[in-house]
Image (tube, rainbow, N blue to C red; front, side, top):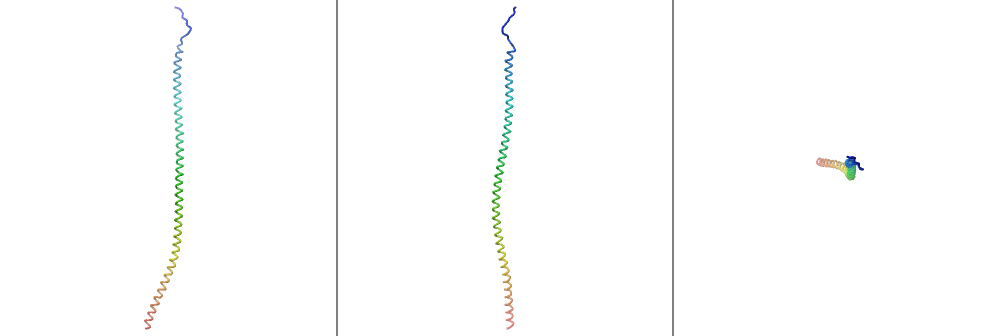
Length: 138
C-alpha cells in the first residue's frame, strides 16, 4: 500500500471549535442575560426606593397642607371667639354700668324711704300726742 498524500487535512479541532464557539456564545449570552436581569432588578429596586421617597415627600406635603388648613381653621375660630368675647365684655360692662347706676338710685330711694318712714312715724306720734292732749284738755 502506498502512501496517500492529500492537500487538505481534516481537523477534528476545527469542528469542535465551531460547536465550542456556539456553546461559548450561548454561555456568554446566558451570562449576559443573567447580568442584564441582575441590573434590571437593581434598577427596579432603585426605582422602588425612589418611588418610596417620592411617596414619602408627597405624604409630608399633604400633612403640611392639612396642618396649614387646620391652623387656618383654628385661627378663624379664634378670631370669631375673640369677636364674641369682645361683644360679651361690652354687654357685661354696659350691664355693670347700668347695675351701678341702678344701685345708686336704689341707695337714694332707700335713704328717702327711711327718711319718709321716720317722718311718717314722727307725724303719727305727733298726731297721737295731739289727740291725747286734746282728750286730756277736754
